[in-house]
Amino acid sequence: MRRTHFHQFVHTHDTTRACRCAFDRAFALLSLALAASISLLVLSSVHCVAQTTQTALTPLQREIEKERARLSAANVEERRDAVMRLGALRRPDASRAVTPALHDSALIVRATAAHAVLSLPADEAAALLIPLLTDRKEFVRRETAYALGETHSRQGVDALTTALARDKEAGVRGAAAVALGQIGDERAVPALAETLGRRGAGSGFLSRITRSKTAENEFVRLAAAVSLGQIGSRAGVPALVATLTDEGAGDDVRREAARSLGLIGDPAAAPALRSVLTARDPFLSRIAFEVLRKLEPTSVTRPS
Image 1 (tube, one colour):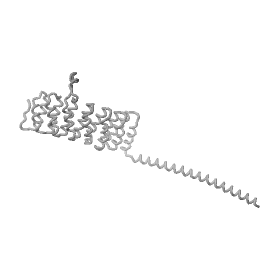
Image 2 (image 1 turned 90 degrees about the horizontal axis):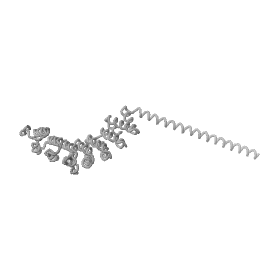
Image 3 (image 1 turned 90 degrees about the vertical axis):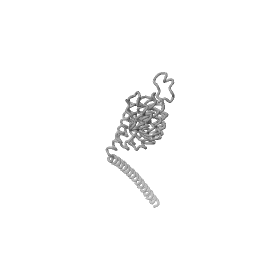
Image 4 (image 1 turned 30 degrees about the vertical axis):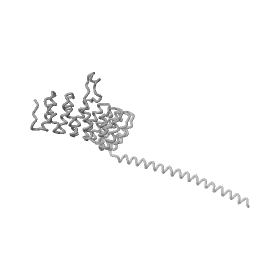
């Protein structure tokens, strides 16, 4: 009797254990199936969201994203083309997409990007451009200076005056002078006046040996003269008068000095303008006459 009960107990225990194992396997399979279903549901949701997002983009936004992707292309010309296309859209969001290209390894891409960010608010664009004024490549520094002028942001004045005074390349200094005139901040007047006061270097062998270390390229001086007129501050008059009456200065520089004196309109410049009415350069004398006619409309006589 006890043996029978024992066998029944063993049989019942084995059956229970078998049922439990079967239940565990079924539960595990059910869990795996549920996890797989959840994964598929998540992936499907992500895909749907991506599709919805892509569909929600406007044609302009899709174009920006397309060109943004091209900024990481291996080919330099493709990256430059993408920068140009983004810049041509003339939209702040397109200009923001260009920002990584300001640090591109290719100088042509960096220089192109300097102009492509100009659709941003002025101060935002200037903040991005200022670091490029110390780029290792002259071409990038020059294009950056011109671009800063186009922002008209006063944030660029200090960096541009530093470039005007210290950059080794005349092209960069000239671009900085042009940009300062476009911005029109009077803080730039001392630096522009100092640049204008530097005599241009001669072209002969002796001149190259004896010229002063402060000799300045004529284009840079001309740009400084023009910019002083654009700014319109009377603080620039002494430097302009000195250049106007300097017969050793280039004709173009003297003409621009006369024009700028006319823009400033300070009567103190009248004697210097009268002194060049008979200058050997007929264009200079004509400009001086036109300026004097505004300053002294009743006393000036036409040059012969």
